[in-house]
Image (tube, rainbow over all chains, first blue to last red; front, side, top):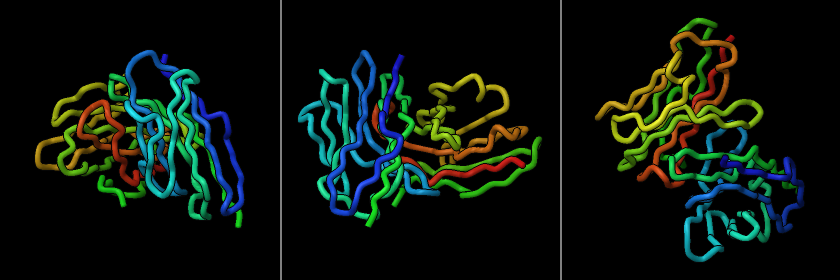
Length: 112
Length: 113
């Protein structure tokens, strides 16, 4: 069974702070790991993905994520958040069937 | 800016009515997915296509839901007889290959009254 767990439902930080959004997965085969952002009332915007190679991948708007096989994790990080980063962030696993398995999302609130 | 175009953005239907939504995938993306996102942020895979052929679909889709991706026309998802529980955000996504992270559209928000 493929599962994605995002342990924090809500994260609140101040503008300029660093942030880490956690994602853990369980899957036995080769996978794509990805992060998406969803602003209120909109669809999902792709941030970044990992399949192989350098475990640290860079995405849009200063986001990066690090894959850890030993921890079964793919945490998302940003060094300095902006108020416009306030949104819901979804971690997802794409298995060999092609279907995405999503976590329940982490709502990031950036306060001024 | 999303390159997967979904229409309409909002759809309001009464119970028992048909609800139809459309999707134009990113150019050059032969794989198309439909997902349903409910108010609890739970995503449910509905169906996916490669070109015009169905790759996978869930049982729910086989009963009241129908979808197609004809050549040279938008893909579509139709609910034959809408139920209150169908109220959700329906997301279309496309990908160059089946096992890559797809690009999503803005979604069609369906409200069944």
